Length: 290
Image: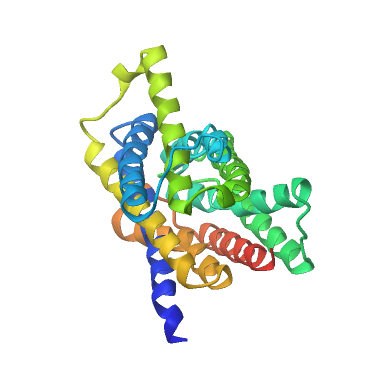
């Protein structure tokens, strides 16, 4: 048991840092934009992940072996994170994050359809629980201080689909790279390059708001980068069945952190709490069964 204490603590650190990253973005987009948050956090991720890759692993330039991560980078994190940040801006952390974090369900379904992987009855129950939790969150109407537009739920749903689809591509490509960190670095580089090309061709780089929220976005990028590093270290020392349930608790930590630091920006109702717990429990069951 003692040999898995450190990996489990690292998995806990991953869940907390991912939650903290979302809360920091929530505060930052109050005075900035999701596109600005995307550019800054991706830039920070790029520096951290490539530094880790070059320091710890033997990296050789091989676009063919990196192809799955390059293709995945066209969708996530770039588009997935943009949808996620837009959802956070419009719906708040407590409504958006649990739904976007349901991406493992999308990955499992796609793996079942395209890779022929099995899905057990326990996994089906987990999927049903996650869907029920997401639907419960989708019925939140807001109140005197908050207005919830049903159409805004499309952003976290799209984020979950994009992250889940990209995860399948990453899974296929893992055997072709020196380490998962290298794949993550390639994946992030593709997304970052896509953002730079978009900003350059459209001239929207002039609209980046980097004065008010940049500090928070840098901290968010450092938090998510730290979470990625912790995750790889945890998976090196413990099996997925121990790491995944802790990692999937990230929306619960987001709920707690938002209650402490951004309570005036968020919704806290029994429906939000129950919906979040259902999504977390369902996704955890699904991951354990896959």
